[in-house]
Structures are given as structure tokens and as C-alpha cells.
Length: 64
Image (cartoon, rainbow, N blue to C red; front, side):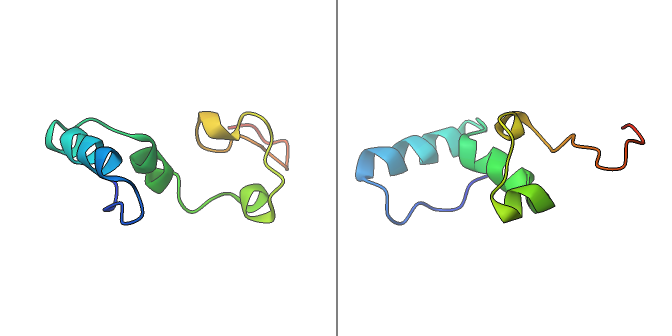
């Protein structure tokens, strides 16, 4: 689950705690699962579909 939010307001912290207690995945969980970012993301040149899952770019044309 996501790390503790230290800079969020009280309502946000409560919602994250509730999601954690009910085992509901939130955006920060997904972000942590996608680490490390692909080389394109590290360079800041992400395509428009990067937020939809792990990178599927095949720079060598060999397929998945």
C-alpha cells in the first residue's frame, strides 16, 4: 500500500487510511508498482499512454 502521506490534509490522510484498511488500491500504490520507470519516463519523454500501465515500447522491434 501507499506510504504515509505527510503533506496531505487531514481528509486525504483519512481516505488513504480507509482505503488501506479496506485493501483498496489507490494511485500511489499503482505508482509504486510501476517503479522503476522506463528509460523514456526517466528522461521525461513519456508518450500519452504511459499512465495506462507498464511501458510497451519496443525500441528493437522484436515484439512483446
